[in-house]
Image (tube, rainbow, N blue to C red; front, top):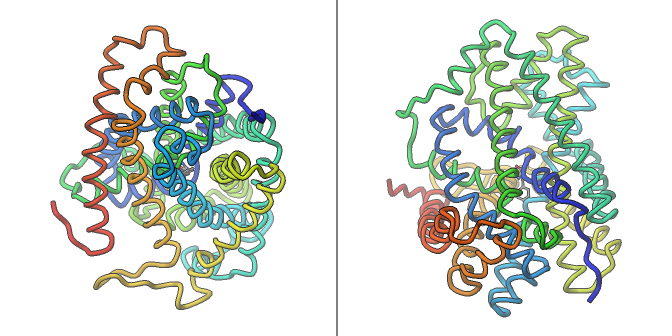
Length: 461
Ligand code: PHE
């Protein structure tokens, strides 16, 4: 057997897995989705999904990966045969497609960092049209997203210990402190308290069916679940490590960063009298106005720190997305890491180009219509298929796989290897019931409902 890479310590695994989880999903997406869906009420439903469904699925992925010592395809195939291997392949494909658009948004963040730090972004007077023109201008964005993919590739090329673990151990704490710094500053602004109220005092009348499944999709995306990322990282984890406590820390870190990102953004937004339901532009349109109001020097410092933070967060996630496909090529196709990384990075960069061009550069990629009143860009479409639908579906298939093929006994054995009193504990009973019954039923149902709503505009409740 060839020697697979591995994390040097439990902390290394936690940093890398938390790095994968914490990303644009927490800082860019979570605040705008929460802002559109009622703030505090959304937060409560989100946390409910995270702990009830996200946590057991995360454990399912890590245990399966560690037990099989393989990439998602190899892991499913090892215990379920070729047909189940397809589920692993589907996960790898989802990861590739997610990375293709994720890298484009990361490129915007990178561009905004450069524009804030060294350009004239803060002298603009209409940030909304600036954003529109910015994302439509593919000549710059091609370079930014190419650059971002290249940085990701260079790190993944260094392998598990040095590249993935080493970078996450520096980037994650840096991100955390930057976040705290901006929060403290934001809370001192006049009017900030209104933002805190919106974010923390729930108004349940704002909840509808869509809120419930956007919160589920958000939970899967944010925890990096459903595409085999954590099967891959789990396969680099040693047998002595306590998966239960490591996964708990990853879930807590991810939820905390999403929570803190909201706490950073809403006070800033409210102190400027802006709307919290601005949408995907929230970070790119609302925030520059706030940085501008801070004055030229402070605005430049806080603004460029913020976009740099966004890049850091994105980078530890793009690393994990690339690693999944790379691990597959190394394990199954016996490619060298160098060949797998360079080829995959290039291919994914190219797959991302239509997503980039769908923001104004090429008209036919900007609006796809499924039913009256929808208009989706190419990127929205890829996001709907490979993230909103495919990730919870991946979680559903994983739980069915554990329930029917791999067995909850093996799942439980694998956890108990590093967790002494696990067998016979309340936690064991809870997790087995969740994986075997609740996850398949709830995720199966949510998959159908989301599909009906997204593509046919049918809402069942
Ligand atoms: N969890 C990452 C984020 O929140 C995105 C991601 C999704 C990464 C799926 C890996 C796999 O930004």
